[in-house]
Length: 483
Ligand SMILES: [Zn+2]
Image (cartoon, rainbow, N blue to C red):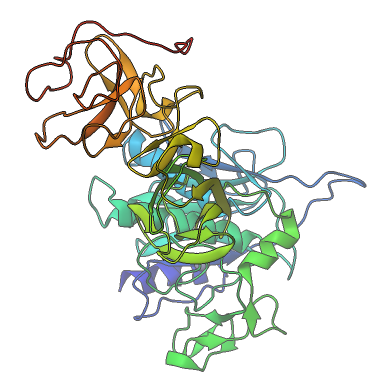
């Protein structure tokens, strides 16, 4: 098979590169031992660098020469001068690959860049072309230099991620192709940092197939997944599927924690927490026990591990995917309760949003309510006209209203609350039927619902009224909110 031929060619160059294994669905990523390279002497007190340059070799490919390649000092077993052809997919695909690599490395204090940092020190991943461009086997998906000592990395390492391989010959690169391209970039640079292959399929350092995005796993993973005929790197394999072995080059160890190793080199970054918003109820809302909590959560990676609801510090629900709507416990008692929604990204970085809500006994009048500014509608205490965003306050969208509802009659837009029947709204408001025809509707300022409670002077429109066709005259008896 072509893979063995390719490997033979490399072995012919005096390099000990292992052949592929039938079990591996991923094209192989070989480690080419380098001679004469190693950590550069950066000088006493030099600041370690942490930039990783993703190079798509646009627009005309990258010229790679034996003994040097661009600004990067590693040597490659490439006969003469070769051109690695450019990243073979469109810009939208490139942006997705870049976003994925950024996401993969986001736990660490490294910076992923797409502009060449030269002449500054940096690591570089060429995500472009095909292995045959460089005279390597078409079955190779990526190549990295070997030679880093255990626990060290190769300064200014250049690695290759052959982008054309991952679409299986297609001209477009689907999500699975993007994930493979991305995790290969991570694996190759990992090799330059002395990381070995592991058997954990969810880690980028593996040959084992995986669906979804691979992340560096904070676990003691068994090294291997790459064994051929019971061997790899001259080490004997055994264990599950005959694919486990001690770790190379850290040959004293049987396990590797990829996450910890990279963190040891560069430190951990702050992560990028998901953005969380509680859409309903509003902060400070009066609610009934068993109320629904709806929230939105997004992460820059586009992926979330889970979203949790806690009430007064107790976890009451968890969802793996949206819509993130929960029910608070029906047993929740009267008083103020803290509602918190926490979203976790795939690295476990949390993003939070919290509100306070109030559960009280049913009111009969505003005087029953805890807050002086509240009014009583249908037994519920709700923010009244004297507070910003309260009933009858001017609004543009529902977000302006503590009730979450902003309605317009075509002239005025005000915050409204639901009402069940005529006579249930506070003074100066009437329960305006907006189409149900049963008297239920919304509390509308200055509307006479015929219950005698309003004391307003406007005419009652005949029959059900739809919003936008309301009465033309509006009497506001409270200060309009200034915008
Ligand atoms: Zn590899």
